[in-house]
Length: 273
Ligand SMILES: [Zn+2]
Image 1 (cartoon, rainbow, N blue to C red):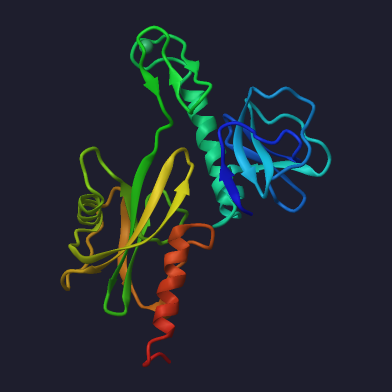
Image 2: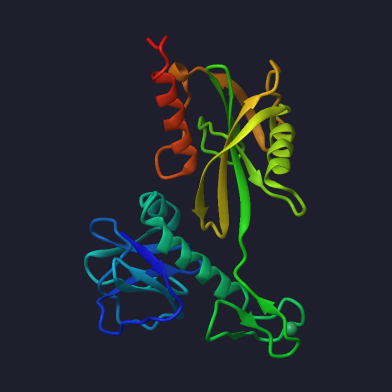
């Protein structure tokens, strides 16, 4: 569905679409088809509401509830992470915008400089401090995820936070002062001791857990070195052939999309099969 971000509703006559999030437990409400774009809402006052923009021509508003309030028949709360993945890629935009603005509202109620209660601007997404004048905008944390290949093989790693047996790409947050390229070289070397070359941009994905932007790249190993896991964040890392992959991320993330792309490239090679 086409989504046009807006700050203020322009068409009061339009049909309404609602997104319902619970603040603390990170849940969102969905209908019987798993869609979070709801036409009706429970008659319980939300903690706060945030207008998001026009979704398929209809005003879309996010309602934030502190906890999971009882929902009307035909609606249920699901884990935000699972519900978000299921929307990949097209319908994640309004949901990510809503979730990140909710998180920003929730975590900037007081000025980080002087502790005074902030005031919400009526013209843009900023919370201002009436005492010292500081402005608090929504934060975003860029992170890089790198698909590393060596010839026909791909590097996949098991992160200590992953479910048992799952392998994926190397990833990490961009540190203060770094360029994306520097972050890529540092993360890859820190986590698996490899040097990479021919870095190329792949695509990006908004990842509102709570406010990341995943920037995906492909790269090639610089030499024949074997990966050496750091033993803390990465417990295992190996080169895998396309026909002998371990358990990998499914659709719903940029990580999965890079693997689908890797496999289709492998299949299209003239010597395949
Ligand atoms: Zn202040």
